[in-house]
Amino acid sequence: DAGVIQSPRHEVTEMGQEVTLRCKPISGHDYLFWYRQTMMRGLELLIYFNNNVPIDDSGMPEDRFSAKMPNASFSTLKIQPSEPRDSAVYFCASRTTGYEGNTIYFGEGSWLTVV
Amino acid sequence: DQQVKQNSPSLSVQEGRISILNCDYTNSMFDYFLWYKKYPAEGPTFLISISSIKDKNEDGRFTVFLNKSAKHLSLHIVPSQPGDSAVYFCAASSREVRKLIWGLGTSLAVNP
Image (cartoon, rainbow over all chains, first blue to last red; front, side):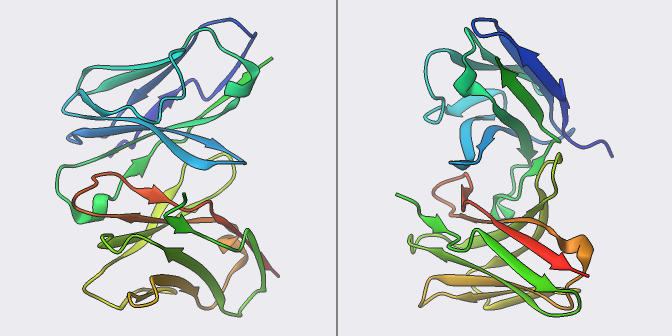
């Protein structure tokens, strides 16, 4: 079975440019999570969706960040305008409805560098 | 305020020996605990979990112990292998809060 698929794997962009990260969750999973990993803060939850509806976006750092999930098999995380401090690895993850300790499955990440 | 703490940023162990990674939590509402392993340039992968109704869960070389009174859990790897070298994240959840709360990770190096 295909896991969580993220694109692009690597992105280098100039400050001020728009960045769009994409995610395809595991088929049948109805929760989708966007995380950011940095050395200082570890894994930060940015936002999560349930059945395509945003449930908790309290981790989104500021208005420059936005996320959408137009259907069950696709989500985007957009940064506009991007800044050097946004450089990090962004992970998408998904899980099913059953509790099971909220075990989630991660994609391989999108490495973002803003110069 | 960190609810899940991994106080050792790094750990170095000799191949064949036991690796013990520790995790402390503050929220008594947590009822499920998970360990994830992360290799460089990859996403974290689920390793092992434990429910709060248990005090031990074993899967091959990996065993997780839970001490609820101390709000402490540990991951034991026996015997350690060089391929176990990775960053290990501890995470906790509760039925009320349907998202994982993460520690900052411990980087394990298993030396041949």
